[in-house]
Picture (cartoon, rainbow, N blue to C red):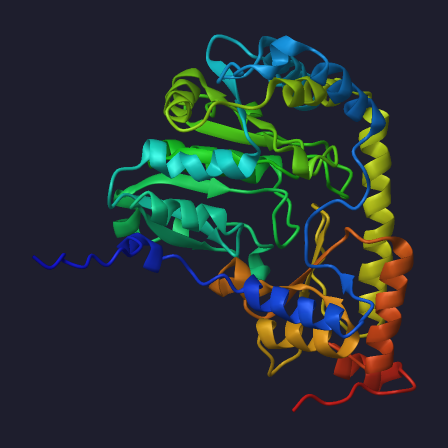
Length: 414
């Protein structure tokens, strides 16, 4: 009897995932490197400076403890949870009472990706910022939930206009993702707007999920903010904190979730069935990081601030239209009229040896922009600006600025 051939294919939900538009940029970057191009890569949000030595030493010491080589406590070791509690109180004035709890996550990306799986049923709506970190949308699709855009428009400072959302979608909505300081735009959110978001989530019976990965990277002089400092948020909010960007620990994969006790308990119960927690030695290093003096954080912020000033002022002098972002280590800039973000980013790689992230990779409302990451040295930023000037890469406002006062004009885009 002839054996029936079985065709094994990915599930239907995989076909709903948006295309990974950064793959084409990776191909162009690889091709440029093979040609010997001295590539200046602004495309990756990965700190270029090393993890502070105190953190590395704490990990080295922890690796010498045999008891840390066994399965970790899934919810997080007591010393890590206690360090996270001290961090929340010291940095955000959020005191850990009976109504709040903390759990360890294997980096906030992993944590955020599990939220729709834990809290959504098939067909539930998840409200995702557009443009926004792609994992919000992908995680919703993989959980058989339905992602619905919350458009972030420049005229509104890239803040969500929640009252404009479709009422029919809201009736089925279970989760609202927010991310401020914002990736990719760099926008920040005031205390008053944060309160409006909390009030909206309470009114609409939504789980508010705050991705606070860039909490300490802001240039407006304001203190780092947490939604959990807003009255009424504790029972409806899960907030994710990452050590990746704050402490230059992207490869260590450690962070924590904090929020309403019942919400955290449900979240960590699901994770117990999926993973085995964060390696205890890494938790020891993370606990050391969270207890470090604030001077180290201030020093890293000064570094990004200097880089930001050089890049933003340099692009402005070349006529680029740059959003006045006040947070994260990203710069959000408009592309010239007549270009898509992917085509323009490709042109920068192929003709100037400069890699940026195309805005449409963060959602349809990101079209028309590219994202620069401030994860290259000041010297490399100056070098990139020199290349842009030499190649006469100008943005929308560049033509008017050039005609008004510059000795040379920008080449008109076809």
